[in-house]
Image (cartoon, rainbow over all chains, first blue to last red; front, side, top):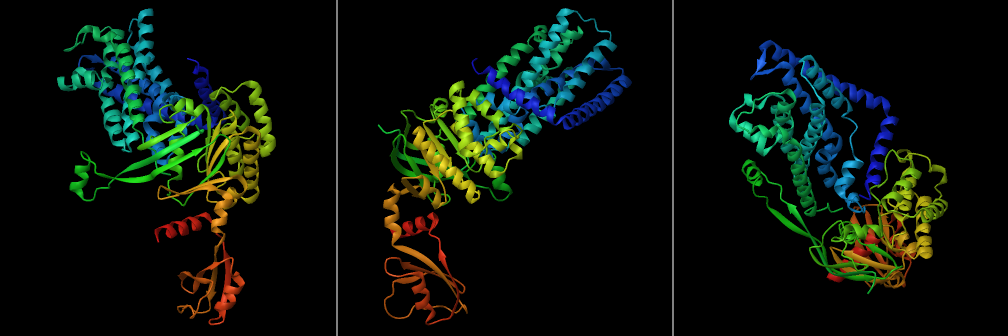
Length: 267
Length: 330
């Protein structure tokens, strides 16, 4: 890709401005980390009281929790702008500027407006995952560590793809905030618990329709060495990277289709 | 073939109706009703490489919509556009490599980046050769007087400085054509003049085609040799600036304010002026510039009624277009 260095340039610009507004960056990172840490403590204490949740111990559920929020942080870093501000940019006409550049509009938007606000969330999530694995005495080998990294990347891509898909109505002058609240913010909470505690319909929904289960549940089965497959085949635990790639291709294509139907504002 | 060929161009916008009442809101989730608004209505023109064209008309005439179609942002509803043999909307990337755009209402600079770093970034976006880049930066910085704020981040610049930087950035890659959508809006006289002279110089030195929309008649006077005027999406005039001025030399407007706001009735007889508009005690008189002067109009009017104030009305484009449009409709 001849333009790779250019898109990296946009990252550099964002990082430079982080250095410039260091105070704000540190504050945001700390507040976000603290709010996740509080969530984490409450859930941890709750499950510790019940001993287990659907056969999952507290530290195991906390791995799901950490995978979910780490994936969200990764996705938000690259696609938060697209899913949140695209509709504003379309409405006030600033999106036009993107189309006057000899660049790929998708890459341009996600790199130019890449978010530095998720650093705190990502750090605390990673800490939660590692802390839970150690405190639960989960035996980790090289394969598992490698797959944990792959899982984080796949989870970020899956979560990001859903963000991208939910941004597309913005091209048609439709409000996407409601859609995002339901299909993104609320539903995603399901997968910070083992999906086997829910009914079959929800399990299938979270696997096939909105495949959030591949962000946390299935890969965690492998990392934690559990055999809680429910109605699904055991090889689903290796499927996350494939799901991520396929879903991202679909999301990108759909976004480009949305763009082809874009109508600028009149002024 | 000319550099730009626009043939029978039409653009319709879909405007979705705002539903009223609970039932209609619920219905609109599934079926949205809309009506279409025609922004550009069968426009045809061609522009040669190196021309400087003023594209004018009142607000909502369809200027920006035309520019957006020429620059590849919008797809035409009907008709053809060819810019250097390319269809801008289909060949968006190639088209944008050879054009520059400045939207006066919006900045394309990076908020936190110093101006010189912005130049460097645009060099990478447009893959400008190092040698050409250096030459252009030097030329533009000198001509637009940007030396003093070159190291400042964009957020600290004044409106005029930002506009100059925007224009320089749009021309860094030596585009064949530059679209300037109200480049002098909101600027003071000094800044306006800097920009006008700059555009003229660039056109002369580099043979860059310029399409400029504006509401400021002085922009047109100083920069453009040719005018295209549109209103309600239709082309009203296409020709040289001097022809345009000649055809509008005839008529001007003077405003006169009377002491009381009783209605003023023109006395019997023929006069080289007539009432154009009334606003309380203030009247606008249209007069024939070849036959009389504002002073004479004021004198003749004041014979019947005492007046307290008079003023010359500027013949701005808005007014000319309106009167032209009304003239056509009559």
